[in-house]
Image 1 (cartoon, rainbow, N blue to C red):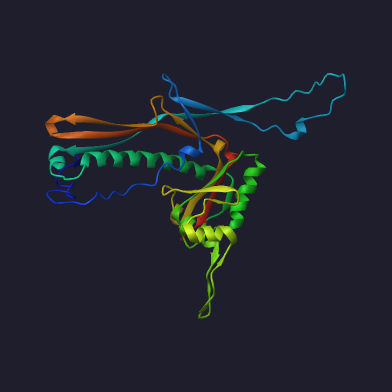
Image 2 (image 1 turned 180 degrees about the vertical axis):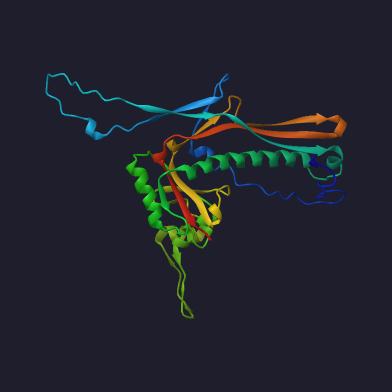
Length: 294
């Protein structure tokens, strides 16, 4: 059994220790950006209606005083997200707690909660790969034209604002990422030239190391996005409108952390559980942006 005992929890045993250094995942990226609905008690499925767009060609001219006999059907498709459990468990022994000068039990709860939150982001970002509309492609470096291309496709689909651009760390800060597209400090021969910046966005990137928006998109990053898709050194970013992805949340909330005493093992079990289900609602409201980051 993979218990947290004195054999593995050695970071603070019998010593004066500093503040705990914990590696957390970057989380809670996707939840505010998708269409979320909580189930009610007695149900574990959330259904999202997907309305088919009615074209302007369905609108006809009418004659004053006459009956307009043409009927247009308003059609919808049902997209269902079924709630499932997402669980992580850690067992902490009494001796490990007694021998640690830091708050081992408190840190365990934070770490488990962060892991569940990261799993939620991982499940939601995985849907970005399923969008049938694409920009860029395997082995191709990201360009601003690809970002504008994603904007074109979302506007053509009449996707409602706001639009979000979700990228991997390398798609933002890598040598072939968004930040690198906003400045130019190339060397010609042996002579470097002054850095040139792309206006206010280039200045924002240099001052903050980040751009909050570009080409009409709010920009976000997630460390749950794969950066070696198909072992080809490509990252799987995507652009989408809120209506593209649905998230069903359990009737009792998104997640919980519980503890249970196991006296015979002289330990306490900590269990974090997430309750959700995710579904693609409207494929045309998303664009898959696969780009080379190698």
